[in-house]
Image 1 (tube, rainbow, N blue to C red):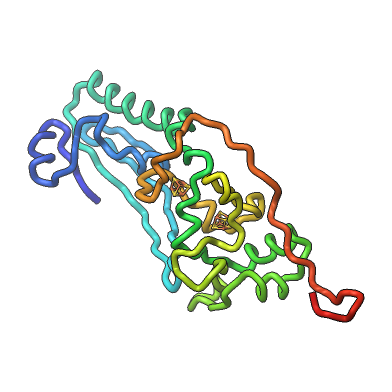
Image 2: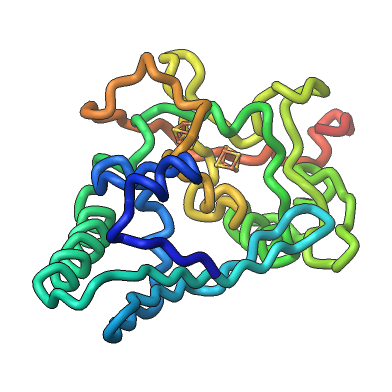
Length: 227
Ligand code: SF4
Ligand code: SF4
């Protein structure tokens, strides 16, 4: 738990290097604010418990910050107003937190982990069995806690190769070929703080995606050759 003296913000900044101008504050944690309590001396902000799954370890964070303030009700209300405004902006300004259409830098150089339910969802989406999906599209490597069963394959062996489901390279803009069924790991990609964004792509543009990914049908042709 951290106590920030709001009366002496400049000292706090000097000591910690954290900016205290509201417009420079990192508002990301406010997304997960669970409860704000204000008493005579403190504002206590509780964040949701958040589980971050790494491959072989889970990080569980429960954060609580206490802000100290003087007993001026106008000041308290102003602080509350800033917090609520920041939360509102995060929700209501999707263009600020959307990826530029066609950007898919995170679909290369990164291998999304998949759980059993991810694999089953992709299998149902593609009309394949669980086993076929594992064999064709997943590098099987169960995590220690059994939650992940592996990660999505890439089109080649290089770590920077594209995800096997990434489509649309010709236009220089990309899209996910299994978007509605993409793994939970991919759903957690966020442009907030993303260093990989393709800055050449405009935010305010539309991009018509092409056909969805289709698995190659396997079987035997009339001459008996395996397809
Ligand atoms: S499944 Fe889709 S969103 Fe996920 S890495 Fe592959 S192309 Fe990107
Ligand atoms: S902005 Fe970042 S998170 Fe969004 S698609 Fe591009 S690389 Fe991925």
